[in-house]
Image (cartoon, rainbow, N blue to C red; front, side, top):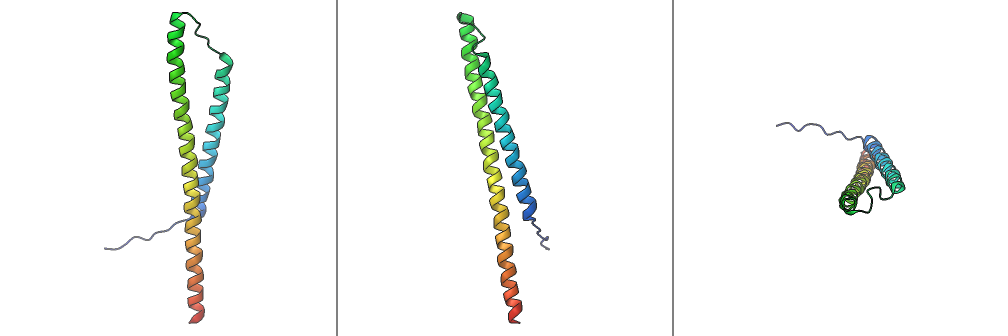
Length: 108
């Protein structure tokens, strides 16, 4: 059985990390603007019994949605950091291997 070649491009991984981080930052900014906009509306459902029921349900759903969006942003941040670490690790291994091979070649 033949083992396929493995080729890794740390710069592509680093670039993907940067793009993912930008996406996380953009989403975080959009969510922040969304929350600010929602805050401008106050409590439009009224204070009567029906309004209180609607408001209670709305607030619970809004909180769950915002927590979910925050969780997504945190996950994207963590994934971007993981990709950046992976790229750095691959670069370090490649540099170490190159130095070792250069040293070995110099001894021949």
